[in-house]
Image (cartoon, rainbow, N blue to C red; front, side):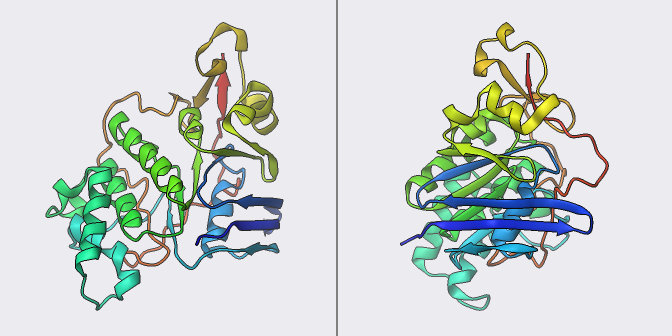
Length: 298
């Protein structure tokens, strides 16, 4: 049975930069949590601490299962001559070992995960030849095939077309309802609304609660400050709040371009148990010198 994962007074410092400052929170089994905040707010840093990729400066993490998977946002490109089906199969190697033979139940889990993300059609194609969105779906299917207790996804729908986004959001709901702990980072309100709870981050935990409680102009202003602009009363959709991504584009959880971006390399994510020999790091430490954007209220 999956137990709650708890972080207490979690703090991470990089020289003079404090990425996380005393974060305390519990992630319950059978729940999906959306972590929201501008780039540099500590979202990815927290996921990396949970995944064991980043050592906290202080604080503690308890209850973390060894059965966990983390899909990062900006992985290195994969140049290995490997098919999408082989990438998917890696999700089961935690159970069998790299030299183990896959059994019928392994193949059934792979097939089901592939169906959820609509990637079985790519099984015989070279993984490197797939579009960025297709690769992202394969990576998430790989994670699901492993049936981990804890699933962490760093901005899983960024750059994807609307059908791909909807599939991933459906999967997030489905797997959390089966008892897994699902944690995602996002800039999109629609994505957050699919979750059971929302954490608002600003290098500390600003507030946490249900989507209805957190996704209000008042609460979002606490996390995003002057990045939440405009007249709230002028719009009635999404409570008048529009998300801006890091390039200043509007987003309600949907890609306005309507297609997968080929070769973006946005999310060569990896299970914490097995990957392609790479570990992608996407620190949002707040000292990369780019402009951050938050939800936008007209």
